Length: 542
Image (cartoon, rainbow, N blue to C red; front, top):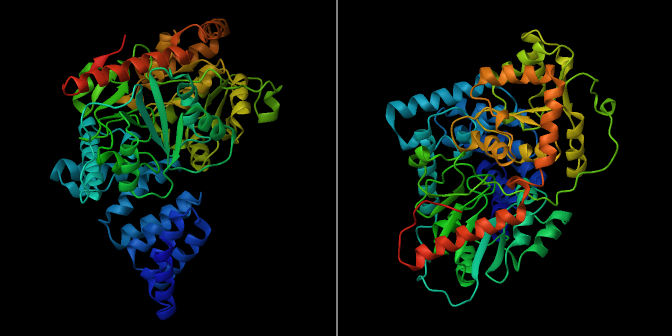
């Protein structure tokens, strides 16, 4: 990387107006997480060659990563004006559009891609949408599967020049060696959920490895996670092949991908088959579409048997919810009052998901709920969509002042403020996942309506595992009616909160030790299949 920087700087010295050198230098700095310097070079590239679509795409991506989302979207859109079929611009623009609640533009983009796919079945269309983005929008399950297959094939192609590393079935060590791969071993939702799992593994039967390629933020979670593993390996800037060789050299038996197709994922490592058994778990609620992932850990709510055709993996059905939760998660004991957060003493609905999960049709349901409960408020997470959400409320006859936007707080304080709300309203196509866990752990009832696909059924899975299935509405009309009914019946809501409190440490959802034993049973069963020479197959635990 340093050699690339030197050569690019020499190129600029020789030809100061050569825009591609500035573009490539900007990318080099961004890959080192030096975004300010990278941004300066990318802006210079666009200044020198304003008609270069790829330069604008790289600039846009850096702007979005740096929180300058509106400017980033404008650059993507200009790239598409210059080159309407540019796959990189299409691939990256949808998520920022969703996060700013630009529903018109997002729907136009999705409709364009779905129509092109239905008309042509072309791989060029699949280049234009990211697997994760496809989970956020209401597209056919078949389309999501084909997108995942296409992107997994691309990951395999990027490492096709090196041989796969898969070893023979036997192992030369007593304990099963399980490796967890992630960029999120720090203050991140994955760590908030799974820290207890890593700590609880039975060391007489398992040896636990972490393979990290994310940042070390030096925080409490990073320190806890480093201590939780038997071996914590920082893959850092290793190439895909070097990382896979390291994992294979460690003799890993079961390698678990905690990233899937989310930010900073590295499916290319898994594509080289560094472990005999490879598993997708927790980080990505959908199929990888890959021949190099054997299993996906789920439950019968998020992946019913009728949906297995949309998954290339064999399904491991956990006995309760698939989602591990950490019962050590601390809730601050700070005294909090509604007035300190701009809340009134009326009924408070809340939803702390990111704005990318808010769909126009669902937001209109929320506005009708507000209309049906005079004096109520909707407490939302702050974000890039605030302006459009307020405007939509006003258009629908709801005072935008009834929308309250929450600022970021440290996790213990964030959990504590849930207790100021009365009811959590879930999103639809892509549910609350960690945010649903936060609400339930803090004692706040949550109302959901399951969507189609794994991502849209997670909250239902959590509610079943904590004994509150009546908070799962069968459709959005029932969801709307039930939200209003609960707001008008404080006695019923109080009873639900009482049951939630009673079930929190009694039922499976927050029983980290029980979940760990079940997952370990799954790992051992996978290994038994493997050493017997059997192909992976779906099975239920327990």
